[in-house]
Length: 181
Image (cartoon, rainbow, N blue to C red; front, side, top):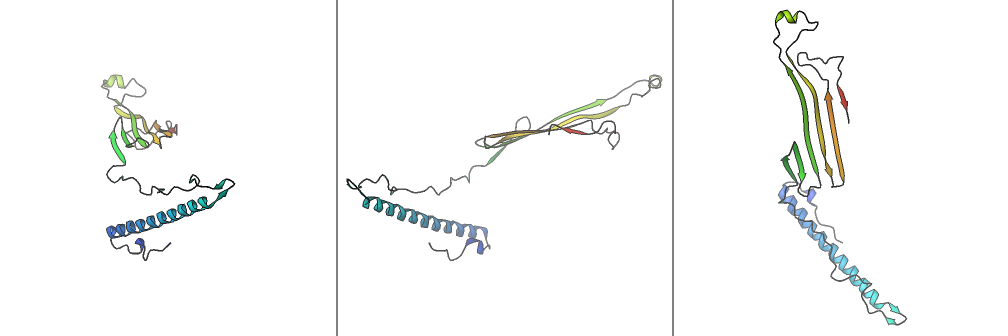
């Protein structure tokens, strides 16, 4: 088997020239492999024809490699088809055309707002006066999908009891919990 005079990676000046050179080298190597396979099948066929059995020479070619054997070395053309589709289906969804791979990103946000208009004489009677405000009660980030149509996964991150929007610091009595990981 001959060695190509120069390899495509030795001259990285232009990507299109490099690609053409690599494709040419690939075709040369493919022809060399096909010639080797053809020589091997001819050798096996001759050996099986010359093999003698008690009833005489073996004239069947069942044990020989067929002459029309050609390996499928050409990969399918996928240059036109996009690998991933981007959709919005109850969240952000990435999936392959054959649906063997998918990734779905979804969220759930529970957000509370309160506006109170109690007179001052009522506010003074309360231990903790009513205050307008907003609170992020819970936020969940969910990732689910499948890999190779065999492995199904689901991850959900739950952030609850977070910080009040009136102060930048979290309440020490209500720490941040991440569960169901």
